[in-house]
Amino acid sequence: MTIHICRLCGSNEAIKGSHVTPALVYRAIKADSATGFMRLAASPNQRIQDGDKHPLLCSDCEQRFGQREAKFNKHVFKAFHQHDHDSFDYGDWLHYFLTSVTWRTLIMDLGDDATIVRIPTQVLPDFEAAADTMRRYLLGNNTLATRIDNHVFLFPSDSSCSPELAAAGPNFLIRRSVGGYTLWGDGFSAVMHNLAGFWCVTHIRLNPNDTWQNTQIAPAGGQFRPPQIVESWIAHAFFEDIIEFSKKRHNMSDKQREIIERSVQRNPNAASLRFWESNQRARDDK
Image (cartoon, rainbow, N blue to C red; front, top):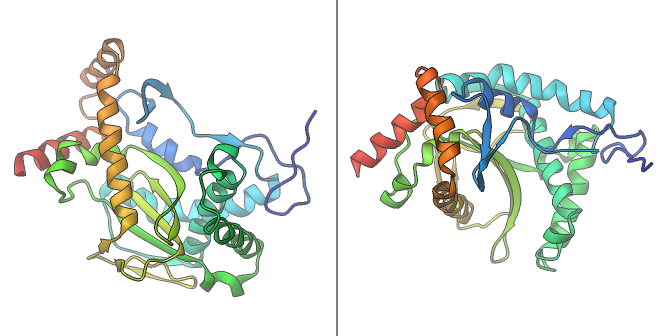
């Protein structure tokens, strides 16, 4: 039997079921769903109940992350997910939480043969150095916090967008999806996550021509307030993915469409349906 060691502390045995992306986001999506399930945008015929889990952390490090996740859920995510609140006060736990999410995705991609062969040789050392910096910070070296550049952009239920994006139905796809990945461009790199519309970006190598206004999360805590403005190659990549995912919905089988329609009829007041309505309003405005 293979024994996996915790990727964070490097000392204790890792448990089998560590989430790469926090389980609280999956639970929130399921809770307001008309069907009680989630679907992968890339695989619309597959219903899922939980996110990817791997032997990443030991029980002690799971608890270390869980303390910050609980604060994020209580003070930020619930109010945003359920009521579109876009202003909040936060402590140092938010910067830590975002870094923990980024680190998990980063080490998964660096350990994945199919991903690492696609990472350019000039980008790979930056990713590896960032992963090490994050690991040491997450273990308690707070002097490294300012070297980790975390940003957040919130997608409310009714967001303005281009006609092409409006046609894709972005509100439902953004607010009902979760996941993250590494990405890189012409000399720039980052790790991006969508936590059901709570969009997080950690810059590994920032493009100086980007605009990130009212998005940066201070390591020591602070206040988060709109308005926000983002003009970045990362946002363009994200929206391109949303448009591509929308095209895959046409691959949904008739059987799965019937299941969804019956569920909606049984649960016409499901909270998630407000995103369908906001998509229609966005199309009507174009």
